[in-house]
Length: 102
Image 1 (cartoon, rainbow, N blue to C red):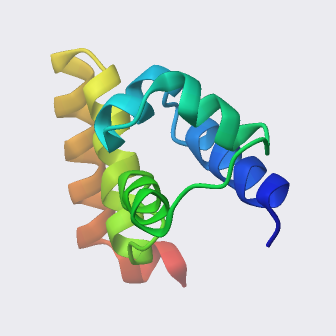
Image 2 (image 1 turned 180 degrees about the vertical axis):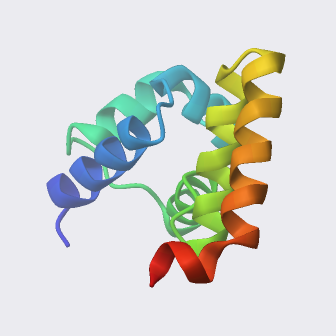
């Protein structure tokens, strides 16, 4: 993967996660301008920086872990009432999963 490809991959993942450049750079511990250069293919991240970015973007998580993170994001954007409702719907679906899938 060349510098430009790495940067595009990072940018794509960041946007998919709904994360701003400033949020990612802060969580990884690099400057926003450095992350911008990485995403634009002007600079290659060091291995430790790349690992931190990927860990922050949850790239190395299992499918179940990614689903948990996604559901958590949905619940956090919801009102308390909607979060309770969504949780109950998920519980009901889980209890009746065999009937739903068949």
